[in-house]
Image 1: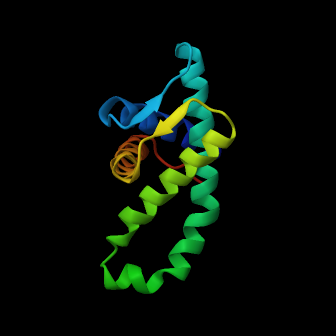
Image 2 (image 1 turned 90 degrees about the vertical axis):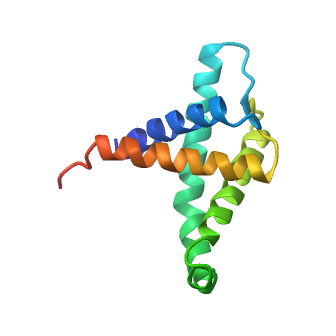
Image 3 (image 1 turned 135 degrees about the vertical axis):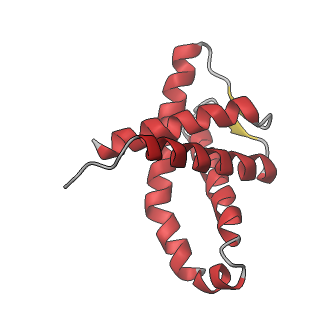
Length: 125
């Protein structure tokens, strides 16, 4: 259930990123295809972040310290580009036009996810 909520939150972030950043597009044939694409890309985004991001943080720990964490912005942009590449392999109509579009898209998705997670509390265990 938690993965589903995070996927929906990420999909909302992706939707806002497509509305704000001109280099990020969802080119489905209709609205429902766009929604499905955003949900699938959000699921891919979640899986990539869950698997690769901890590995990158461990391997790049020194860079995180040296740059005071600013390297995280670059890492997030590169992971966003990886998601774009994986979406292309799956023939999803999701396109990112380069590093800077991915950079701003990752920031927008991160901020939107953070704001929505502030509103939706974590379930108590």
